[in-house]
Length: 450
Image (cartoon, rainbow, N blue to C red; front, side, top):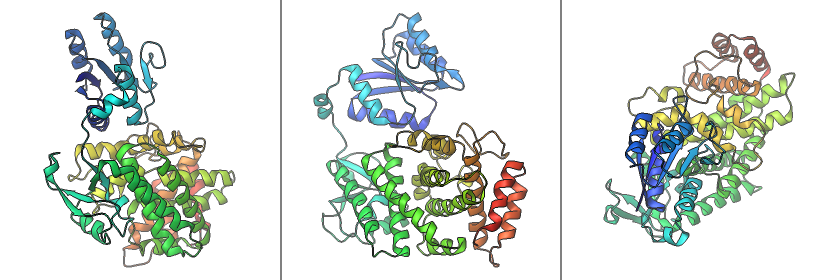
């Protein structure tokens, strides 16, 4: 067993790195969140066999400080810097990895540095049962393999009870566990890729059916959206399954918003499917954004396609959160809900940054999409939610922000006794966004088919 030091103030990363490195490489990390703790362990010579640090912590150059401490103590411990904001990033003083939550890349690099071979990794005990999101399993009417439920918090195999055998009737089972508050079911670890590929293929095949009507298409796209959200929430890796199903769903969303002539008709069509908030936001936001781009003087079809891509992915890291807390609807409210754990709130606060980093790894990602996603709550660093919308963000990010706010106003007013009125929604947007550049975008909504 190897040991190491992880210098990070990011709880989500800490959990991901510690679990995966312990599971696959048998490296046990000690986590420290402050420089004082890190320097103490280095001074004592108890940093272990490897050090992993974020490139910056609290706006300080974490990579450089850790490197200097190792030099002072004359230690030759290998150092991995996550991110490129340190002075030693991309130098021969440390190994540099991208800040995109690519956990398999971190595992591979640590294994390489420590001389752990694939054969060594195969000998490491891995969990017998693999958690798979309900959103993936709901694609099946028949169980694709043996499925289990977890009955305790430990990882002992005796704490998993078989729900059904392969080939058993699976219709309705996912909904029953959703209502119980479950997020995952469990399958044999060696079946994970097979099950995910099957679920993705079923969605793509359904969307390729020329006989499918809009209502059925909306249901299947939602299923695909949930599968992508479940996959990214699990590993943050853009796998071939994520690419295939995302491209198909984005293509179909574009077709639907072109075919449905009025914004309220589209809202009703989606609501009939009792869809989740994020998917509703994604499709409706795409509809509104494409209208704005058509009306604004500098808009182009390229801008419209880019926003379609952005709307599909911008809130994807919130999918597991809304699945876990289905009673909540609006993302800005999540931070203040006592039911959310600190780790979940951390994801909510950072979801724009996480999605921005993830799309950079998507094949042929439209240029600038990562910046639009990073800024979609008005914050240039992708962390948190602004109350004061400024001009220091990209024009397409402003289109996304206005489109989202329009959709939120429409959803909020849909439950009121009186039907939502376009002029009332536009008035509320004008009161919220007072800067000239935002007002010009809002003006484009006066001509939307409502």
